[in-house]
Amino acid sequence: TATDFLVTTPLPDPGMSLLEAAGTVTVAGNGMSHAELAEACASGNYKVVVAQLRDEFDASLLDRAKIAGISNFAVGYNNIDITAATANSIIVGNTPGVLTDATADIAILLMLAVARRCVEADAFVRAGKFHGWEPELLLGHDVSGKTLGLAGFGRIARATARRALAFGMTVVFCPRPPGDREVSDEELGEFAGKVGHISWPELIATSDYLSVHVPLNDQTRHLVDADVLNAMKPSAILINTARGPIVDERALVAALQGGTIAGAGLDVYEDEPRLAPGLAELPNTVLLPHVGSATVPVRAEMARRCAENAIMMVRGEMPPYPVNPEALAG
Ligand code: GLV
Ligand code: GLV
Image (tube, rainbow, N blue to C red; front, side, top):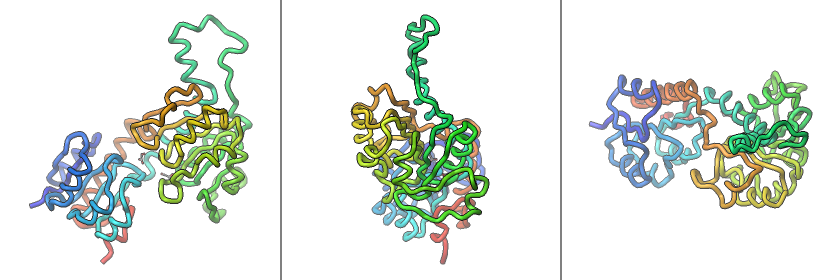
């Protein structure tokens, strides 16, 4: 009979112990190639795949797959073709909520680090170049009194807004760029009268800091392209903690080289783990290795939710955090 769980990359504690207590587990090692994953999914040997963002489930894989579900160890699920999963009655689960504050912390950290040249300054001290206080040493930009523009208004954007308001920033947002949508007073909630809802073109033009908080999909791929970068203030700083392909990374490198914008703080890249040519050489960037949710407690809670999703999927029941609940209907 089929193994209950195929785990492509081991989960942090308590993920593995929860899975092992609930059923049979095969661990692939440290990731699988796309061909290995497709073969394993088509084999009928596994009921549920416990997956990572690096595992790509495209339509051709899903159309051949004999699995009941995919439990993704992430809040984002752009690595899975959800339409194809639903068409094949494959339920997908994610880990929302628990990583919101940690990721908003990284957005603010990147904003401050770029504005105050933190990484450059640290390297300066370690290189033995600090010879005492100087009036014009490593001058940067303010955040207080400046405008933070949020592309998106989901959980992570709101948590970032909360932090930015505490720093005395003006906060504006566009909920579904490049388009727009209604935001009710109820949805605005604690932010009523504190943040401004504006159009995407206005957001681009007015932001001193533009922070991206949208899911990656066909509407948001290259949302920030050369035209958008050109429309930003030359003093503006771009922050991306969402998904790399939302920003045209080559256009960003050109914009940073040419002074079209002033700086960028990135936790995600268009073609991870590769960087666009020239990006790593730019002093006005701070580059992190996709660590938005990387705290011990957050990863533990993500692992718990990921395991809980997988366990319910093996039983043929609705997981607690479904992405496509309609996959189980009928
Ligand atoms: C990480 O990027 C996630 O989606 O959880
Ligand atoms: C993700 O958790 C989001 O809604 O921003």
